[in-house]
Length: 194
Image (cartoon, rainbow, N blue to C red; front, side):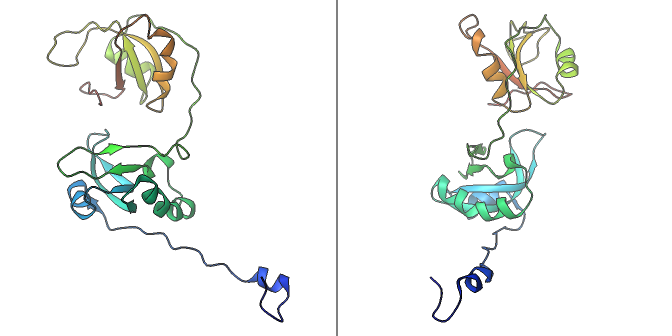
C-alpha cells in the first residue's frame, strides 16, 4: 500500500532491503562441532581430507536446529554469491563423528542417467582411465583379500559425476547381483566411501 500522497510508481522505485548473507571465519570440523553442537550447518569453501567426504575445514553460511532452518539462513548466500550447489548442502554437526552430508533436493544438480550396460572385466587402473573422477558401481569384484578393498578386476554397471547417478544406472542389475561396490575413481589407494 502506498503512503498517503505518494504515487504507486514512486513506491515501486524504492530500493528493497537485501538480506546480508552470513558467513563465518574458516573453522575446522572440530571447531564447527563445538560452536554449533548438534545443529545443522551449511558449509562453503570446504577443504576436504584426501578429496573425499571428510571435511577438514570450511566456512559456515547457515545453521539451525533443523535442516530447514540452516537452509533458510544459507539461502541469501546461495542466491547472492556464486557457489557450487553441492558445497552448500547441510551437514549435521555431531562431535566425534565424521560429517554426514544431506543434499538439499532443490539444490542438487540432477545428472542424466545413461542406458544400462555392463563392462568387460577391468582393473582399477583401467576403470580410472575410462571413467576419470567419477563415481562407479562395480560387480563381479575379484578381490585379492578380504582385509582391504584391493581387487584384480571388476565389471562396471554404472558411472557418473554425482554419487547417485551410477546407483540409478545400475538399478536393472540389482536382482542379478546381491551386492555392488560403490567407489570414486582416483589415482592411488582404492577407498570406499560409506
